[in-house]
Image (cartoon, rainbow, N blue to C red; front, top):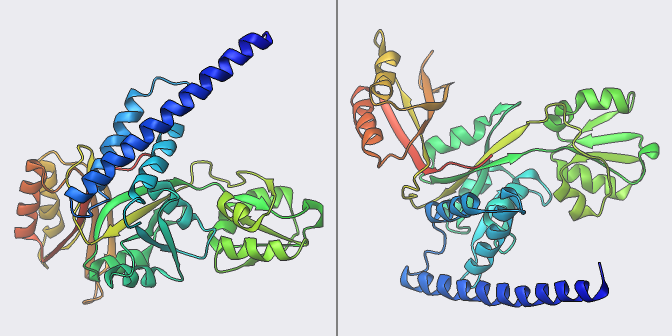
Length: 353
């Protein structure tokens, strides 16, 4: 390519950059005006889900759908921050997968508040010291997070969105040949067992409270390695010595976004709820019948001890559709008549994997 042709391409890029800048600021101005009309309601999960879906569907390339979504999450995040920024509580410390999930959903312009436990996350949002909570609820290899389910039973907070995060584990450290100990959370160590057996046999594995804590320790000692995510590597300035070392390549954690308001229908939604059965023969079958009768698909059905009596259980259910959809509403009315106990945690937009 000649120098003249290269110069013309660069001039064209410069002009496009200025046009993009102008359009982004126009968008920000409209978003701020909408926020004033809505009296500060700057986060509408159903609206944001619709925007991101439409852009992904209309994307002509060459940028990938994932890249386009990530770019627009940050644009939306920056526009929201023109008003009073959202405060998001997540399971800390800094550098955890929970923080990564929160940033994936709310963008870097949100104010992130690291919390020491899931209980603290609920309390911070319930007390009004944060606007939304991001809590893990289940993992494809580790199963459900019992504490999150237990707290949902008691809390007035509503599920207003969900986040699906592909969990990639990485070996962090200064020099792989210097490593004499490997630190990580117990779950991460178990998710990388085969890789460690093959590549670092005989190296002691030490459990710590979080992957971020493991990365912090590795940043202080070249003889220590850590298994953690990319965000922890960035936060503690650690090189990634080996990427994606998890034994299950599709390992994914699902997070819930909790707040005080309900999410409106987005067109592609889930509803989460819990119920218990009356003490009579065939009670559970009767409780499930309304879903079948109204053609509703259940994406999750899990039982947990209710703690109210011997062999009494609560049934946690995720279903396709919003509680305001006519067929879902009809099924829930019938379920309420038959259930000994029913609580709807919320309806919310389905997450993209």
